[in-house]
Length: 295
Image (tube, rainbow, N blue to C red; front, side, top):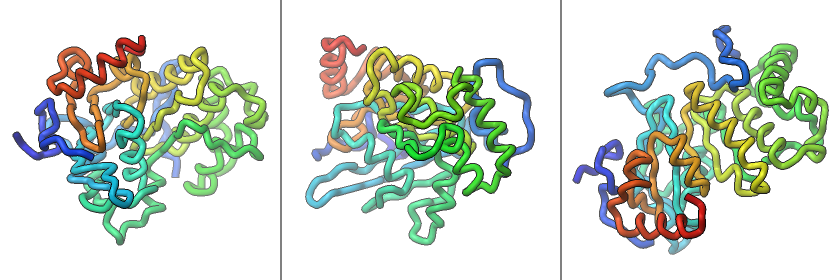
């Protein structure tokens, strides 16, 4: 099989191993969350450069191989879901993409630029990537409004009035307009996570990484957070999502990658991976998920 990370082969192509604010644009439909801004020139299409590309990425902690020869293409305006058991490498992969972890081998490209090159301006790269973690990570001493507008004002030099106006519009679309002056400890977990999503979107990133964003939520709060992700997908945001929400991954993803022991064992459309998995390890994982009532 081909070793090209963009290969259309369903199972992973390698043997298994151990181990400034953009110009004004039309407003989105009422209730929707604006995504990253105008569609880039290299919009998704046959032969288009992927927004994100990983080639032969390897990451180790001591003798432990956490990621092994990871190859992955993420086209513009698409959603890639990373599924797999805890410890399979999903979060580490996202941290490598955002340069929170160094890779030991291989390369990560954003819009064709190798961002793992030691000469790369890492701060400039991070300004193009939004990240939301499961722990919210809102600044407790700042109001909701200040949490959302901090990066646009400090990093992107957006005037305060403009940043606050856009933040209030975002909050209003999610029914959180009356929470703008509240501090995070006055919000529910679901509200805090929605604010964290808005904070990431407010910087108009090229790529959004979501790392188990519902894992710390009570079950009844999960739906309101996932609804925001659905809106972002509809607006064309390019996303990579690490998730244990299998039904949600099946619904929103364009591409699903099953990770096991740091290796992408299988990849394909949701219908392929969930409906007709090829690899035995994938079938075992999905059987256990189904028996647990999570799919």
